[in-house]
Length: 511
Image (cartoon, rainbow, N blue to C red; front, side, top):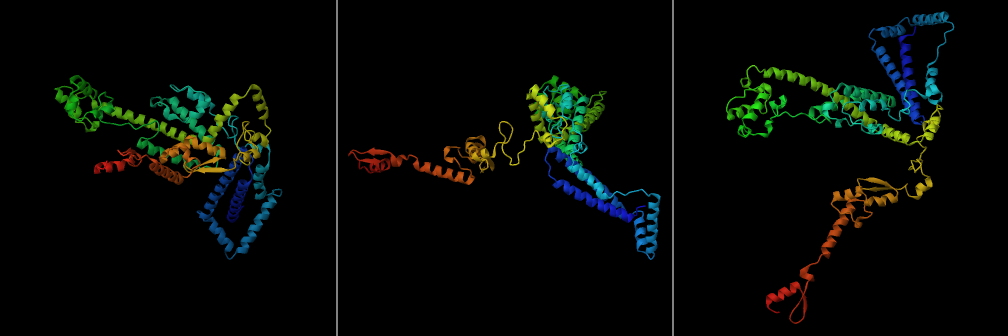
């Protein structure tokens, strides 16, 4: 039987081997998207094992049953040799009863993870299940959810590519169309799929914290009435609760309300089950007294006898409370979809591109693609959509990186930074010169209050642009025509003088 001290030693060794194997997996070179996902799943298995060993060690060190303390006292007591020979006798007895029992070292067990990392065997290539459409985590498979969406009552009819682009725009759906059971089932299925897909491609993420953050953010937006697609209802008085057609928020006094007439005031009072008799002034005063008040604040004597206004109010309030909870649950599901769609933006763009590319293929190209996609499990099959591009060169018309000599010929290895464009970086002199006539630079100049003219060509610093603009304005001021100095006049003797001199001589009577 394994002693408690030996169990602790084994757990410590196991933890150290888990950490060592995780480090080796992290630094191991990964050549494909499949290798990245498999690596994270191996690390996740090691991490779970590490946490399980930690929990077991914690229980042993806490020693709630005092067995570890007794064992340590037996080892360090006055009869330590007796304890030693008793344990030796127990070991010999165990091997005598199990002569062919071979203990596998822990190092051999952890060599299995090394084999999983380095081997190209089929059982080690697919550590997690993905559908054919998902491309081992590169794309989303929303075909089933697209079918459910287009079959919803009142839903917009769209093709699959449009659905991939707009499936998270739930705030565009009318609020009156979100109360059906089918819509709720659709949201639950979509949320479950997106959550499952995220856990498969990001096994190391802590989704408990993410879901808690989503819940807190949703609660704050819901209380403030800012959650997309669910604006907060405004209540201006008791009439809004009962659905009456008369809104008192537009009236500031009962005199203004009286201008509606006897019949209109009577219909408003009847909608509230209130007394509707009396003169025009009495009806207006009675109805205006309900402005800004809830049913609890209205004087009970104002209700008509036998109408049960308060009972009806209680039923409506109960039904409204149930509807409110249903709406909040649906909105909570929508908040999760918003966050998941944000986290899957890269896979979403890849899905749209992949579906577009598949639809553009001819029948022969599809057959060739199916033959290439047959299980060969080579690195070329894993990365047939991702060209080898270690220097991050731009892609040409054929989807492959352009030659490096062409990359340097066009100066694409040189970066130009423009502060006016918000520190945007342009690759190559051609793109840099072209950007001065584009919207981004023009918008930056407009924000500075400077016209985007040829004077500011090649000016990228805000300080230089402002200084040049001040210089141009001063120069234009100096070049402006001044009539006092430049306008010429001729006196009776034929002398030509400027306007200022001519006016002075005229005032002195010398002309």
